[in-house]
Structure formats: structure tokens, C-alpha cells
Image (cartoon, rainbow, N blue to C red; front, side, top):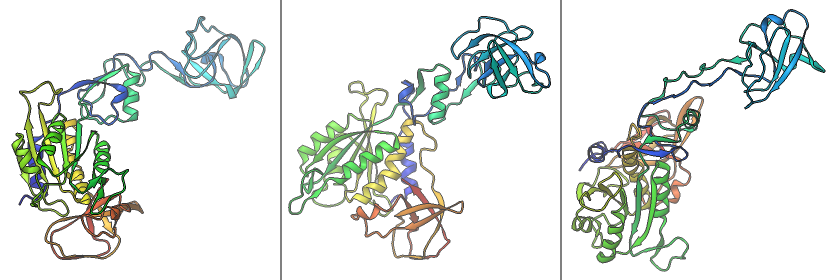
Length: 408
């Protein structure tokens, strides 16, 4: 049976990043910049004031009080119309262009106004005080952002300042979500005898969206091969298809054989982990079909139906596939070390990803394993904000032991 590391290695060898495309800047949050970005213009594009006050010649301002004649008022967005000469000043607002002749802005708090005269109370300011010169931030032609950066608010703002309405990046993958099982009913319905609500679809859609994907909800497929084929056919038009349930060894676990019938090639099935051992992963080549953007394949995940199994497998495997398609590096989210807050004993034969609560205490990460009753106990994860890795052996963990942890 594959280890988690080996399964992830196979996944990354199979999933290839999308090609680059031009994405509207307002849709680029969380995407990865595909090329180095250089600035076409100087920033700022003109010498401008950093304060509300008066633009003056530094030679005109001496110790004590200087009285200067105000020749105009310059607001942000207005071009100065007059040169500041000897004994003159221009009232100026923050962000407005510095008029010719002036080399200092005296703060409004250091002045008083009497008609067209302004009294300057500051003492001998140096040239350039409260002024930012053209090109101080960036010179035209400077490369400002490097390929591979994930776009956040500051970087999107920088792109906007440089005039980039579209950016070269990789799009978000469309990820179809299909829950399978005769026992499932929509969440708004009250379950009948032997039925449960379809919690997995909502959970997986939320996880997919948080990872950067665009969830496409396909509803529920019953444990009947024709219906399963129809729903899978619909899901194979997305970049990724995630099925929940039907991948174990039961009589009605029809997913692997149905996928095989529909041309999906298995990459791996079953991984040495708890929960989530029955996970299935494969690929469907659709290069001979109609246009599917810049992805000629569909990557398919069959996740176990128990909700915590689906949750853990989505965090470890589906998230890595989404990040890989989008060009996020590293595609596999690395663990963080956290100190255990309590003693804990394990008696398991497989490595376990235990729901956990992660907190920062005194500058270091701490972890508490939440009470949990196995892969069907989804409510037990409500108090968790991540999971902790426990090795696949009987072991006594002690307070202060360091565990690998993953936030979600």
C-alpha cells in the first residue's frame, strides 16, 4: 500500500499546471503571477507634496518668521499654473504636484494666513522636506513583481498603480463535486429511516473554494450504475471531479469500476493513512473531445464516504492538485511543528491525521487533539481548526512533544 508521501509524489507527477492566460485584475486574488512585471512609468509620475501646507523656496525660509505672498492654491489632480518666485508661496494639498521653483512644503500646522500673506514659522527646512520626487518609488522599466508570487491585496494594488488591468496568471480550476449513496438526502430535507443528510458535498465545496478552486455541485448519485455514469459524465467536463463514497470494497461500491468503464485511468487506489485509506485517484484524457480551455484532461478523486475521511483526503490530496494546476509552490502544503498541550496515547496500525486545535502561545504554535470518535464523527471536528499527524504505531505522546500539524 502506498504511503501518503508516495501517493502525493504520484499525484504531482500526474497533475500538470495550467497554461498562462490573461485574467482580469479584479479576479486575480490568490492567483499566481505567471511572468515578471515591469513598471511602464515612473512612480510617482511627478514631484508631489506629502503634506497639506505651502510650497515654498527653501532659501526664502529663514530662522524665525518669514512672510510670503500666496500666488495660487494647488489641489490634488490640478496642475500648477505659476512658478514660485522669490518671496512667494503656493498653498498645496497632499498628493498635488510641486510647482516649479518650490523645493519645500511647509506643513499647514507651521503657518498662519493673513489675506494673501502666509507666515512661515518653521526654522530653515532642508530642500526636499515633505516632497517625494518623481520616480522615488519605481523607475520606468524597473521589474517590480516576480513570477511565482501569489497575488494579495498589496500586490494587486501595485499592479493597479502600474496600469495592469489584466495579469498573466493561471486560472482557477473548476472542481465538480458528486456525493454518492442511497442513504443520502439533500441537507434541507429531514432524513427518513436509515438516511443521512448530504453533508460531504457542502464540506468539500467549501474546502475546494478555500483552496482556490471553483466548486461545481452535481448533487447526489444513487448506488445505481446508470445514474452514476450519467453524473460522472457531467463531472468529467470539469478540470477535477471529486466523488465522495463508493470507493471501498462493498457490494455497492461502484465508483472505481464505473470510472474504469468511462476511460478514467487509475493512478493509485488505497493509501496507508487513517482516516481515508480507500482514496482513489485517476486521470481521464479528453484531448480528442471539444474544447476544455487549456486543460485536456480531467483529474478524478474518489474519496471515502465517511465525512472525516473525505475532509482529510481533500485537505491532503485535492488541495495539492488545485495548487498544482494554479502554479502555487509548493503545491503540497508543508506542515508546521506544534507542541502538544497534553499527554496522548495511540494504538493504531496506520499513520493518523487527528482533528486538532492549533493556537499561538508565547510565540510558538501549540496543538490540542480534540475528542474524536473516528471517520464518521464530523461533529467532532467542529472544535478543530486543523489536524495533527500521529505516526502509525502504538505510542505515548507527552506534553511538549512536537507534532506535524496542518491548518484548515
